[in-house]
Amino acid sequence: MQAQDALLGWISDPDPSHGIRFADPGGGWDLWPYPRLAALARSVAAALRERSAGPGDVVSIIQHSGPHFVGTLFGAMLAGATPSPIAPPQAFGDRAAYQAHLTGLLATAKPALLVTDLAVAESLTGQVGTIPLLPVEKMTASSPGEPSFEPAMGELALLQFTSGSSGPAGAVEIPYSALAANVASIRAWLRMTPDDATASWLPVHHDMGLIGCLITPIVNGSDLWLMRPEDFVRDPARYLRCFGESGAVLTSMPNFGLGYVARRVTPEKLRGMDFSALRTVIVGAERVDDAALERFCALLGPYGLDRRALQPAYGLAEATLAVTGLDPDEEWTTLRVRPHSLRVGGRIERDGTELEGDDLQPITGCGRPLPGVQVTIEDDDARVLGEDEVGEIVVRGPNVARGHEDGLRTADAGFVHDGQLYVIGRLGDSLKLRGRALFAEDLELALSQAGVPPLRMAALLGHRSGVPTVAVVFEQARAEWLAAAGPLLRRRAEGAEVVFFDAPRGSIARTSSGKPKRRRLWRDFTEDRLPGTVIAEEIS
Image 1: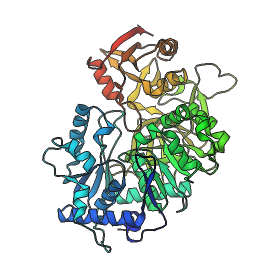
Image 2: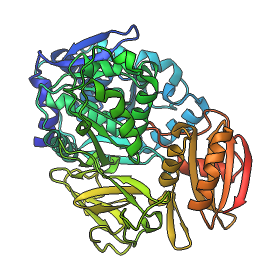
Image 3: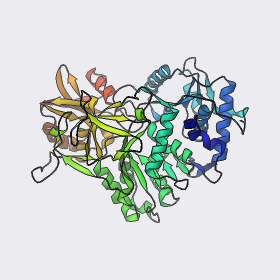
Image 4: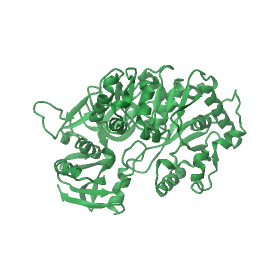
């Protein structure tokens, strides 16, 4: 009950001086103080109990980011049920792909009911089978909620799903104890106080946006400026004004968010803004690109941003969210290493006078374990490796999901140097070539640094008809991309068949954090179901 109290205590004693500002379509902000959000959560909890949803039941939530999502999320917890957020249809675009995605998630979650909002409910008609579909606005219309509503005992705080970058999205059961522990670790790591406001555009149905940029600020009792992803895409300068004008000091985003800001926001749009108080920009969800960090700093630095505010981190849904991060006020570190040394069982070779040239691979550190979290690097026999030795990242601590209490083997390769974790890539997205390991993330990073836009390509690795193959999918390939990619792939993928594939825009399926869904793309490529054409094919 103590962990549940830590997460839901704000509902019984909400601070009227703080709350969440939700972005509205007209460019303004709709302020919901915490007492108003607490009343909505109690109303949802009462409505769920009226429908006999409680401990042991899963409540799937398909809603846009907004006050009703917050009310439903915490209302389900208050009722003792387990909320399970799912992306709304608009996050996919492809109706058939969304139907297949939704069917799989609901079959896994087995929810007692599905709570949506009126804006989404119509588009879900006929897609959820026999599961009761309830718009939250109608549920709460007759359930005002009781001020003294006592939370029901529940064991699971969340049923969240993995991003699906290396296969189908998997269900992750997060106990209250794990969620409370990770939220506490994040608050301690970032030294959060109720006066430290957060701003976010991340989707709220996935761990980084859900836990890092929604649940943690709410439990912390601090202000939050919350945008939808499409708001950010449409006007990234509006997001920056949350820091440069409104006083937010904390945020999180993946690499591609930094790059998008650097490409779309001009210095003219920053006039009059001051980013000197922006304390923390957590960068995670994918391999951290040093060049993206530098471009972001180059844009905002003249307006007061301290480069130490950029804090690469590592986390994953099976660890609730956060695992490692830089200490506040510590500048990020990038090593340059020989690609051939980046293999499980290998030892990294770092930059030095004897290591020079284009073959050096930059890898940015993701900080040190958060309070209460332990990270080791282990080989296939679970032997703990030493500094600079490459192996699988294993996480232990009170934050890990159910089923991983003895150690979460992440399927991510990495190494530790000077106490910091350096993440190489997914073991499932690598290919062994002539005694060395090639990682999809390495190729994509190298291609982006050669001038190929990250959101217009994906690297796929595997064996096709028994032959080691590297396929690079471009969306509407340009001649200059191919010219840059050819020599790079011949050097990096020596020993493999290299295929360049030209696909229409929108063909590369991605997770909510922007990562390519490589296993799905590989399957479609090898089964000739990926739209587009092969434009080059050779043995490297």
